[in-house]
Length: 115
Image (cartoon, rainbow, N blue to C red; front, side):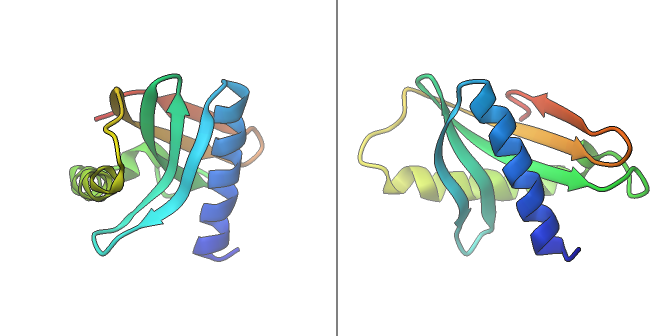
């Protein structure tokens, strides 16, 4: 499975997980020249930027470890562009990370307000 298809699969799993929790999808794969945000959702009145990391196993480490300080800076820069395009500022916002590990037993870990 190539990286894009793997990423799409992880994002679909993460979105289903979030929707079961009552989150509403606002946008997917929002891209700028700085980078990309996987999912943008609403959790009540909070706008949430979600980074999804999917691994088919643990051979490359824990998926949450892949959200490095550099990656966090990229996500923040992309979020700033997104917010500048909105007509009204959201009441609240946060950055979440979802790490999914597939394999014999699928594991989904959701870190709210990760950075």
